[in-house]
Image (cartoon, one colour):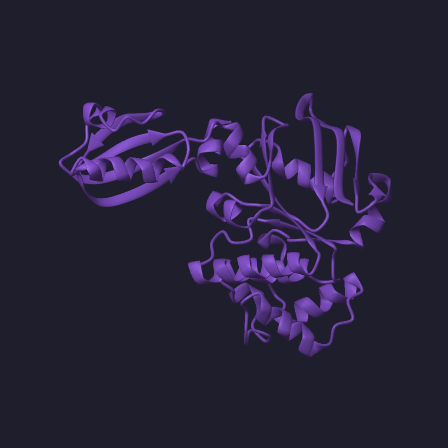
Length: 300
């Protein structure tokens, strides 16, 4: 079953086309990474999916409900709010109790305290939100998104502003939510994070979906290259590499005692090491560098 299905979605503001015919499918139970540069239209798209604004044309459905059934959709989704929209004067636990009541979430006080701890906010129940750091506000925003036991959760930059330990905790929480069968729609500027935890990734540019697929599919479509960095004695050059007698191997450069070789597939690497060793080349270090999601993103 599809968690999200979007068909030819358009949005126009003051004569400007912000969204230009979005087609997108998100499978239920996956972590879906949504990328794009500032101004690409990401926020507008998410605002439409979560009922904040209306599309100019086109349609979408969420968890089997059409966009005309937005009130029913809202009962099934969780949305991480912007930290500026939190009720700053309220204590953390009182805030969650209030938001839980609005969501129809009947969790006990103890269970809400446990939710705070789950997102990395232990022992803050009586602390006012206005005293929270930026990172703490991000965490309680995630807790709010989890109220009501939603099937689909929209998380916008959930780990930005967090220290590394807290970011890892939130990533683990997201993976746990997936294990529970929930669908996560995740935006992030942390491409390493997206590559690490997402099942599928879409890249938006200029109001359109430029690329969509698994990380492996996106890399393959970008003609993934493999660079082998070798620290050797003696140093390598194109002639010595040619003497190895291996096809589809190219000398790229030698920089600060390290030679960079490009190969077409991983299976070539052990053969290259074997041939160089046979030539009495001493190999001190081997480092493999492959095309990253960042490379794919920057090429869009």
